[in-house]
Image (cartoon, rainbow, N blue to C red; front, side, top):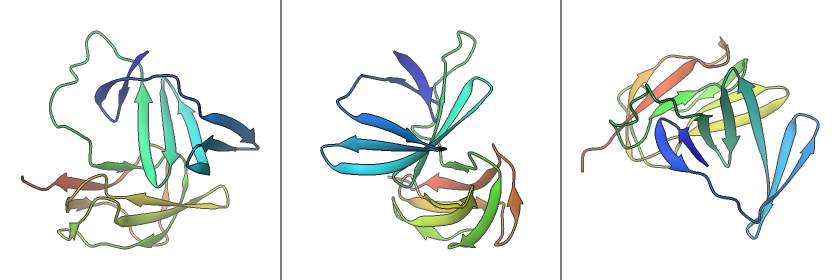
Length: 145
């Protein structure tokens, strides 16, 4: 089944992972172990936070062009919450996987990490700030290769 994941057209395939729901959390068990995840549906988009990364999954629309950048550097709040820590400043260089922002939502802290090597092009939030779902909290600009 094809979907847009962070603006990129992707073929989603079935896997051997087992998903268990406990309250508002998902527990995903794979050969690598069991990890928690959050998934929030908003309109026709599903915001997923898993293993420190955030994904926006949406259906492909005939009128939408999926070309452009290889990968989105937008760090988007999947639900309302409070920014408990900002670990970078605008213009700072980051490596893929570096923690950028920590958000607390529904009594759970979630780290938002750089999706690739680059720099913080824009930092929208500050520590202690309340955010709404869908807010772009920071933008990571991909490093030139």
